[in-house]
Image (cartoon, rainbow, N blue to C red; front, side):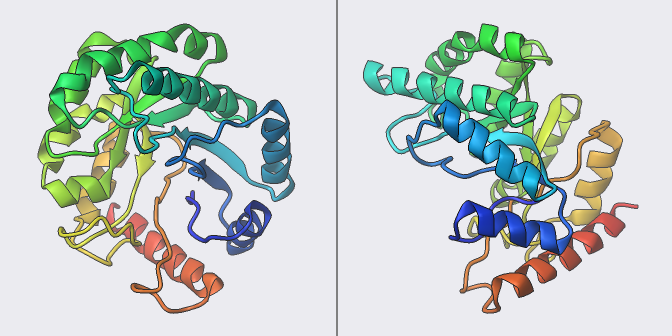
Length: 256
């Protein structure tokens, strides 16, 4: 139930998560660069995850600088599609069921984003992997609504990001997509910066969020996309993980 949080090697991070009692993870490494994983990487990462008693449930697709889902430059667009296909194949290889994608920030890039999505439809169907469009910007509810009207729920679902919803104060508009919920990015902030901190750091209404998730029918383990930063927490990694785990348990109880 935990996203990567420390600038350690993969094995160290997995060991820390497992020792803290987490059993599921959302693969978020390399989400903001153009790294392509090889088949050898697929095998190595899968073995490392399994060796620590963990299971990967979904993967964050790439959103590298200049290589976006709605890129108008043909070279950048082709690179994005290549990266997306790579992550879909990787997700299947490590046992996940969904790959997160960021919608375009500009409405003018919507058509290109649909072209990218169409490009991987057959691959997703063949591997049993869905895409999960994440709320990232103030008006994303409109883009998400267009996606969900255009694409079947088995193919394109929703990644709910509680921090982004709190930042842009549009949670009411986003909660209408509960029937498409496939991935969670749960974290907290104070409405000013995208802090990615544990529950009760900021102003997210955790009782409301947890109740909504419970009512949605979402059945996977919860994922908290939280990040250790010394400006928010000065303790050691183990201390931060302990703090995060206690905050998560408090949030879970808030929704009951």
